[in-house]
Length: 202
Length: 63
Image 1 (spheres, one colour):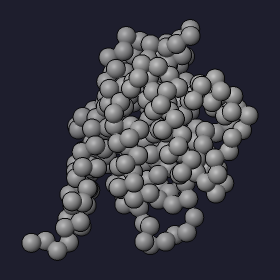
Image 2 (cartoon, each protein chain N blue to C red; image 1 turned 180 degrees about the vertical axis):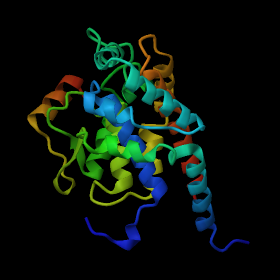
Image 3 (cartoon, one colour; image 1 turned 120 degrees about the horizontal axis):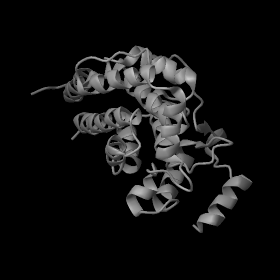
Image 4 (cartoon, each protein chain N blue to C red; image 1 turned 135 degrees about the vertical axis):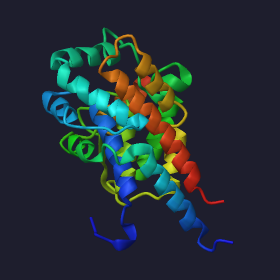
């Protein structure tokens, strides 16, 4: 990757990408011990995201790792299905593997990305979408994508449903560790929407 | 009035992001993300690869 001055990424955008990657790491599979150890080291300030992060960090320290993993299974895997189905198609149509997934695959093809080998979930899983946003921001897919391009992708594949999913996660019956993950995600989605609107040229 | 309207908008956006506490947790958040494998990979030159896995997925989804 060229260190091209024209493509220097703002610090704030690097932070956005890191937060997307952080959420992806917690949501794509049951959290392993090393991830939970890292989470337990994070501290947050008095802002809403900061407080939720502090709570999450505390829980990562205090809860038994096997219990947290079991919670992940109850939330997202279950027997046949988990308590929640974190897929764009499901939130928009009530079914998995629907048109929203087809639309996403089209856009992924134009960007030049695909699902990695051995990943069983359809691509419209919240963790995959967070990985995609981080990649668009950082330029992992050939080049950094402009704010306008990021906004287009976000508004099409994430904005219509992700805030609702994270709110559901906050309130889920099985959620203890994952409740503050829901809070962080919900607030972040709101920040992203507002920030994209502020950046729009008229 | 402002000749650099776009620049002003971007400054506003950056300040908003800073104030919304994206900075509060960055350091450690950055480290947690690095080690994890992504679910997404780049495919060569934009050609979407119709692997057998993808073909059977499409077949089952009846697109």
